[in-house]
Amino acid sequence: MTTESVFQPIAGATALADEAARPYDRRWLAVDDRDHWLDAGRAPGLAALEVSLRFGYLVIRAEGMLRLDVPLDVIEDDDSVERSARIGGRDVRVVDEGELASAWFSQWLGQPCRLVKVHPDAGPVNWPG
Image (tube, rainbow, N blue to C red; front, side, top):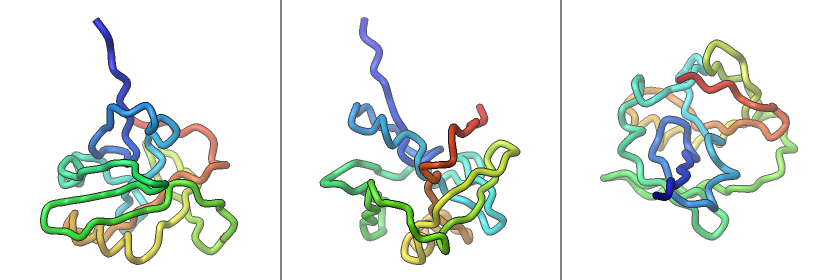
């Protein structure tokens, strides 16, 4: 019997049974207008996302929405896009993915939110449950 590893590029969203997704496991997350992590319980639409990795992009699809492509590996050198997100009662350094991603996720999830990724220098995140 084999056990397959699964990885969630977007925390709380669809998991991928793809070893290529390992370095991107829970790298991205949606946060509300108070910068608190939106898990699948607070944002049920996350579970309906189709997520894949293609040609250096995180590709996000949802029914009735245009595809959203987010670059996988970007050097974080712009301090103006850094913020702090609350994950499991702790503040974590994150990078905002911009207005297009924010509009896309806000529309899909039906609430104001932003797509952010854990900053590469943030250290390990203590994800709840």
